[in-house]
Image (cartoon, rainbow, N blue to C red; front, side, top):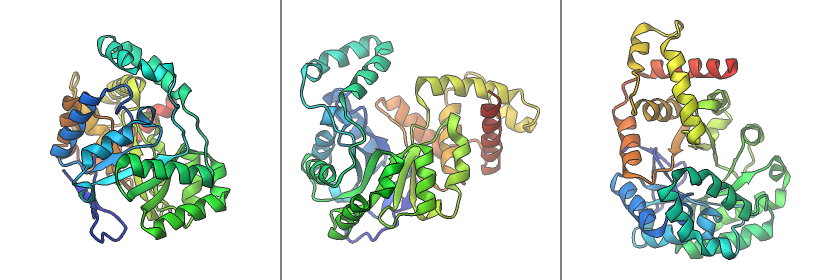
Length: 332
């Protein structure tokens, strides 16, 4: 496993972050307790020390599961959580969650519908000092810790950048030692404006980066963006992203714009091709320090680790592929 330095004093805490992080969104949501714990254990065994959570994940139960799992070795781990999306409080839908999880295991096609239902039960856009305080105290209690390494505004809008009271409250949490790094997650226009404004309180940013949004690399490479710890999520873009990636690679394989030896590496029916290209493309020469796929299955975890450790592509080839995929996206 590769690691990069965290740009904050260690002082007895974790000083490095694994470039492959573990996205905790499925924990206690579409994945039950037993399988969630198994996935966390496999990730830790593989050397992953970066776990990305949120108050809203798993109907509000994901943090508690992670906190219990990390008990006794918290200081060697890097934990990120977020506020701004409130989880549903109780309700009949949460009570039947175990039945829904069982149904998804039998009928995987139901996963998309379940995700829409879960999203409909949460309340987004909750960015106030009061919500920050309440949400953060709950997060600390659920995570069984007295600090987090990163606290982000979750799916933030542009308006949060004008909320001086909120940004100052986050800065005070950093000064108190309860938060090591404060930051923001959101869509690309929000990220680009964050890079431009450089709010003093924010030292990390998280955003989606996958096959359909590789052109955003032009923003992450800017000097102002490089002042933040950048983390990419959703690298595979869900089922639609997997499908579009396969189509794009097929087109690239036949593109006369790429060198012949590179096109020969784009083998058909190679399941390792997608993680190898996307994960390394995101981390190579972009300014992005870590990437957060969801890895509930051991096979996915092993595939992603192998992709980073045994990449067949050079840095120059990854750049050529990135430019080609951006070109194909524009033409689509």
